[in-house]
Image 1 (cartoon, helix red, strand yellow):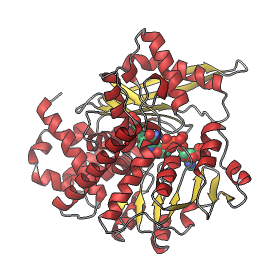
Image 2 (image 1 turned 90 degrees about the vertical axis):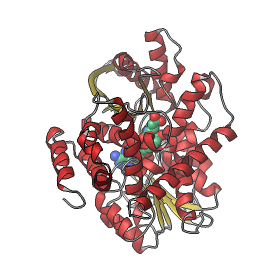
Image 3 (image 1 turned 180 degrees about the horizontal axis):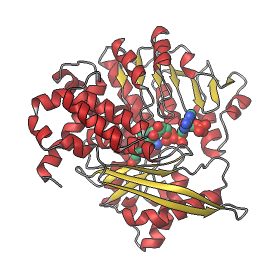
Image 4 (image 1 turned 135 degrees about the vertical axis):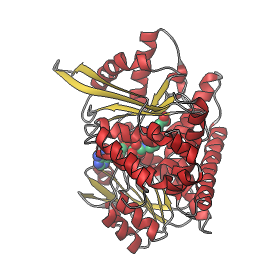
Amino acid sequence: MAGMDEKLEGIYSDIVRRNAGEAEFHQAAREVLESLGPVLAKRPELAEMKIIERICEPERQVIFRVPWQDDSGEVHVNRGFRVQFNSALGPYKGGLRFHPSVYLGIIKFLGFEQIFKNALTGLPIGGAKGGSDFDPKGRTDTEVMRFCQSFMTELYRHLGEYRDVPAGDIGVGAREIGYLFGMYKRITNNYESGVLTGKGLGWGGSLVRTEATGYGAVYFVQEMLKARGETLDGKRCIVSGSGNVAIYTIDKLQHLGATVVACSDSDGYVLDEGGIDVALLKQIKEVERLRLTAYADRRPASRFVPGGNIWEIPCEVAMPSATQNELNGRDAATLVKNGCIAVGEGANMPTTPDGVKIFLDAGVPFGVGKACNAGGVATSALEMQQNASRDSWTFEYTEQRLAQIMRDIHRTCYATAETYGAPGNYVLGANIAGFIRVAEAMVAFGVV
Ligand code: NDP
Ligand code: 2IT
């Protein structure tokens, strides 16, 4: 296998054998292992302690039945997951995803990425992920509530502010966190604010958490451009997706003088040469919960392209912010050919391995997800800090903290890549820097 020595190749084939059929987890693990050769060469004690083998095996995996009734009384059975991957640096931390494509391999890949991402934030949080194959699309509020209540009826016993702290991800936003928190509070008879993050502002939530992933991703791209003497001002940008991450990525890009000409959902993309109208996008997606076609209906200057490939639109900055493997090698080649000068991953693992290689080979600064989108979970950790001190910070102060964390992550990845002989390679820098922080804690704790 390219880029891996014999020892790492052996670890990788064990992962494939022990986690059969979990393609996304194999992909995420392989990307990290491909970065670790130089670390093992410098730090043989980490190999001796089998740190990599231990990091690749979740500490605990919970799979459970989630029965619920829809508004007509029909009974449905979904599957719930929580993979508590690593608690070396703090309580398990990571989002919940509700999407029909969810199975163990997706949750495991996301939990694995979360270990290194959370380590990069410098904050005291371990790595986890959870979710369900429940499809919230077309479901009423009361159906979503009953599903969340059933989901929490099992999950609560695995949570706690010092044990495991979930948040949102695809299909899980403030509404779902509200229903989940309400059920947790009822079952445990405790007002334990710090057990979930992404809460509403009136009941323990943090200002800036809603905006944090998108804003943070843009700060990261800003730093990558700065390292090359560039700015976002006047840049033509593409952001895929139209959910939480995409909306606030677009918002911040335009605030900094860029123009975002397109965004998307799973049905196609909207092209708006004048720049996406963020207020209208928020109204349609967050308030009315409609599809992106409604945006084009209300804004005659734009048009919706059903089934269109958003990466064929020429741009200078691309920020994939929808889902895993949404940008492949062909798309990457098209972007490079069309003059793309920076890529920042708002989503988790949106670029396929051949796509990543094309960007790296072309020398296009590539902000890998676990570094670039870490602002969301970092602000979740700031929410936990506020909850622990029964305090709430201002928008300005919280945003300053987020911006500083993103600059620090960029500096760490940049410097680590340089130290390990791969200047400008944020993938290598993020993997090595995140790994070392977790590995050192694991060594200190002994074989546990
Ligand atoms: P949302 O549910 O708010 O939005 C998801 C968006 O992605 C929608 O536009 C959705 O379109 C699209 N999408 C989802 N699944 C698919 C799919 N299989 N194919 C095509 N399009 C799809 O989720 P978020 O914005 O929160 O999450 C987006 C990405 O960012 C995910 O990869 C998530 O893991 C990652 N992320 C999220 C963080 C957060 O704080 N929320 C933090 C860090 C990373 P449609 O409506 O058509 O399904
Ligand atoms: O992928 C992610 O980092 C998230 N979905 C956010 C996790 C969190 O705990 O805020």
